[in-house]
Image (cartoon, rainbow, N blue to C red; front, side):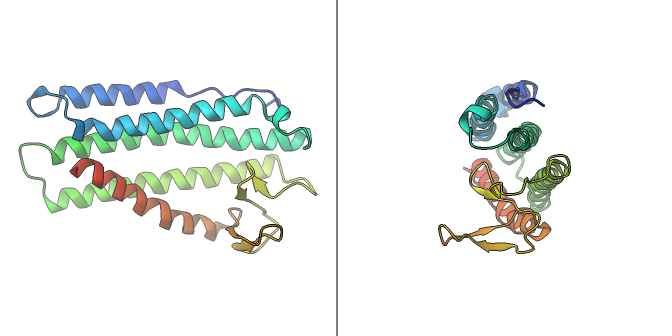
Length: 210
């Protein structure tokens, strides 16, 4: 990957979300598009698509945006963005499909059972867990191919602390005094999962029950 390489938007995944929205409208009770059913996929498409466009735009100008870093560091940052772009694409599609399926079932004519609600919770949990695991594996692979250069900033994208040589999970930054999570440590991904999984479930539950 060259420093100026622009990461393409995975349009196939987001066009798939458009298909999910259309199918949700077609199979909605009475054949009428219900905002309670399509709101979730529409929201995911807007957020995911916006993030994908931003990543694509930033990735083509990394060298110009960060002239102070070496070419190796630019390659590393580009590889990390590529991991995020790929993961966001498939996660956005499957998460929107799960929201649509849950919305159709909850807003259907037959009352939803407790067993089905638990199944939807497990589905959201599984998607969030696989997403986090994929990101972690992708970052580990980038660390192997493009290790952090000596003297380089341990911050990914300027905001995420990632330092494989630091054994601490919670790190207090000397320049700001704030405490951050070292995402190079396996335990940090567990902390992230505890934050992301309940949030994903609550968002999905609010959307399909609203």
